[in-house]
Length: 208
Image (spheres, rainbow, N blue to C red):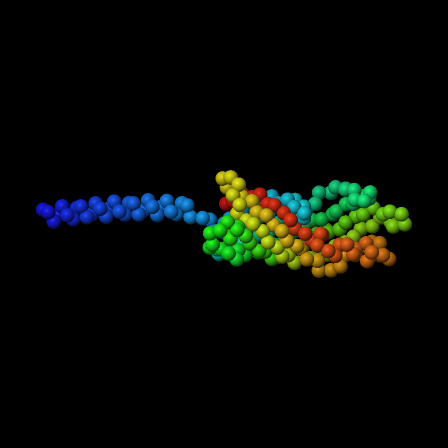
């Protein structure tokens, strides 16, 4: 009889300990940090120097993410140095992201990634009003551009809404040309720098 009581006590103790371990383990799992800089999949709106557009993403493995999207610049005229400017730009792109510090607990390690990809511009030109003896002209910039960049991702806003930020460069693959042919180099020199390919953007997305 005593042996049976002892066995019953031991069994009850084991149940109690197992229950405590289960509860503690569950609580620990709930407070573990989210290590990935990428949602499993998402769809959102992007706004930045390349224009406004839509972007979809899909995370594969632990450290890698793929994105596709398009951007367009609204057809608006702006004044620069007293002259009218009009940018005509519409593009699609495919980007792969890599999170180098995946698995580390620091905030930056859990959010930071680097990117590479390619963009294709259906249109990528700038109309500029002439001045004096210089006529109106259009500058045409390269359409196929490799991309390099970096960013912060999987920034929680509320519920299943998140944000990512990007900073990078769509690298030109050819020199700019102009309809003002006899002085094309003069009007296109400024477009060989960083500004036309600059990608500084914020994406607000829904996680799936």
